[in-house]
Amino acid sequence: MYLLQHLPASLTCCPPAPSAPLLPSLRSLASSAFHLAISRRLGYSSVVSRNARRNTLFPCSRRIARLVGARASGELRGDVDAIIARGREAGAFVEHCTCVVAGAADGPLHRLTFGVKDMYDVAGFPTGFGNPTWLGTHGIPDTTAPVVQALLAAGATLVGKTAMDELAFSLAGENAHYGTPTNPTAPDRIPGGSSSGSAAAVAAGLVDFALGSDTAGSVRIPANHCGIFGIRTTHGRLPLAGAQPLQPSMDAVGWFAREATVLQRVGSMLFHSLSLASSSSAPSSSSSSSSSSCSSSSSSSFSSLQPFTGWLVAKDAFELADEDAARAIYDKISPHTDAIAAALGGRPEEVAVAGEVGSELGGVHEWVEAMRVLQLIEAWQCHGQWITSHRPAFGPGVAQRFQAASQVDPAGDEVACAQRKRARFTSHVQSLVSGGKLLMLPAAPSIAPLKSAPPADVDSFRVRTLALTVIGGAAGLPQITLPLTTLHGCPLGLGIVAGRGRDEDLLAAAVTLAAILGL
Image (tube, rainbow, N blue to C red; front, side):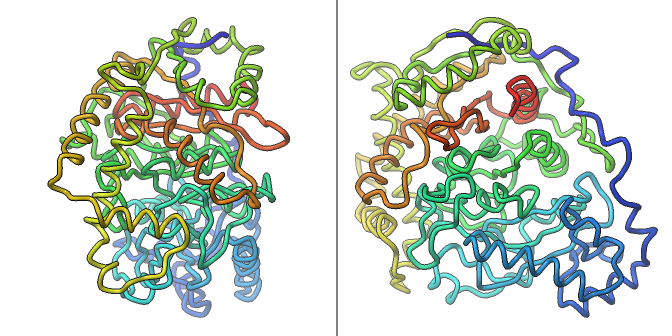
């Protein structure tokens, strides 16, 4: 087995901007008054901000960029409606609202379209949170979540809210009320959750990127199953105001893209605009400074990137994956070992991330049990009162987890013990990647389970998955899933984890690795 380390200066910048814009500037095509008039005619919302007069309703992804200059409202509405119809047919977009919100007329994300997981508030549109009772018992928000607003202000256009698992409490992507979004790369298999619709929409080419969230793998796992890039950011690095919680001590903003450069482009803008790295919840570092510059015409370059100083291979994590999955990952990497080693600074070092059973760290399954207890108690603290008051119908799995959550004593020894264990293994994992180390592990135990798999098999896969996602997630570290290879014709991903606050460095590494590996 072989591996990487150390990003040279030539590989740490974003790729160059396109040589010329695909279309003339929107501002040269029509006046703001025209845009606002058409917006009212079509019933679409424009961005509510101080720059509202500059906003446009035009969706600007490559597939529909030809419509930017269209003066015929019927043509424009028809194309957007076609995308929404395709998304709904695939189960990727929600049915309860048509959420189209125009981005600013220019900005670093101009010409990109995106979807938003239906747990983020968008002013004027209901937030369904994956459950019809939730939808029926909550009013329509009058403010937009800051992370969504930042995307709109940067020029991206929102074309739909995306489907999700109930209250984000699942990794399967199956919703008992609304169905299962189609996995475009493996239609007979589940898409993964809970950010299922966002992953499906990106994989199907309906949007350029899509916003999700990740607690125990809700971005990392759908990215693996659908064969796309996905990032879970450092816990607390980006704000989750205006988003419904599941486990606040682990919930993190995340997003998907088909291209590593787009994943990085979105991150550059968000970290520049919204970074909370200076807060106590997310210690700042030279690599996570909000001084990163943005450009309206290109993928932004990072001014504070730091090279990685080594690459760790989580030996025990690879032992948790299916043998053929681990072999497929190694087989993909091996031919590119020299190039990867040149990029990341040398040969890898194998580590047992979770320690051995019986050791002070207790082994990965003890980590999973500790985090299970803490997730249950936090989920009930967030939603127990609403569940007790409204008695919503939950689907299989979600119902059992909330039932278990209702039985946990927040003052009991079990919770206190779990908190001590989490503190211990969090400190351990953070120490492994301190000093600029990059950690590699399988993104998931294997490819996505079949839709026809018995519930017991899906739940077993979930437990095995948690043994992998807990490593970076419980420690609050940023992690990216790379769509590395295939197994039996289905996508299989590689996870890369960096130190706390090194999200920009991790994104740059993902771009470099994608180029080397041909992703």
